[in-house]
Image 1 (cartoon, rainbow, N blue to C red):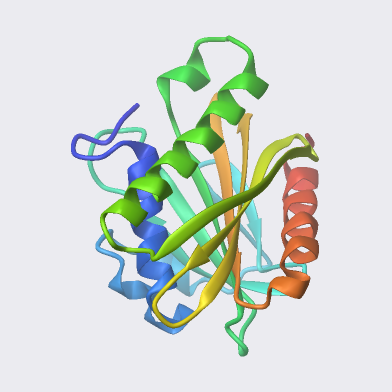
Image 2: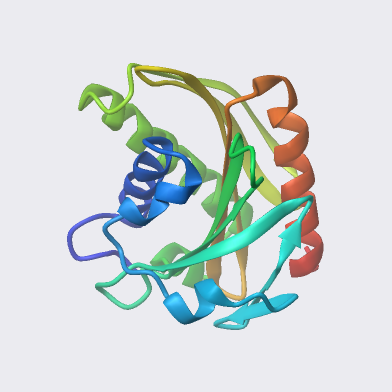
Length: 201
């Protein structure tokens, strides 16, 4: 399903823009409401709408659960960060989409969703949120369709990765960003593989 004002890809792009604008401690600038009870949880395993989120994934710590108000199906996200250096952070988005419920080719739908995210980022460049965005590669890994992008902001360059799959008739999207590009690809792949194992892909 789609949010009444934005596509789900637009919601993701807006959330990421808020995240890239500041260190993870300032992510609360995102206009969508926090699930404060779940965000405060230090449980080793947090279950949200049937999806499991461990306290840590490849050394990154869970610390925020975000709800996207509006049309049912807009979903939620769970944020992880490599505290205290704040150089790497990731969001796992879970949401519905009519394409996820059609019974058609899931891998093609996931790949199309990656293309939609890239399209939203290109529009963000035209709107002046980014100075430049480059799609460096696309591939398949651990059951996900994936892409690596380089985003140029006013004061830094961020390497950003997107992984998309379908699970239980919902899209699962990982967006991981790193300001140290030398290790970003390795960390992103490790995170995606770890979450893929949780989904039993």
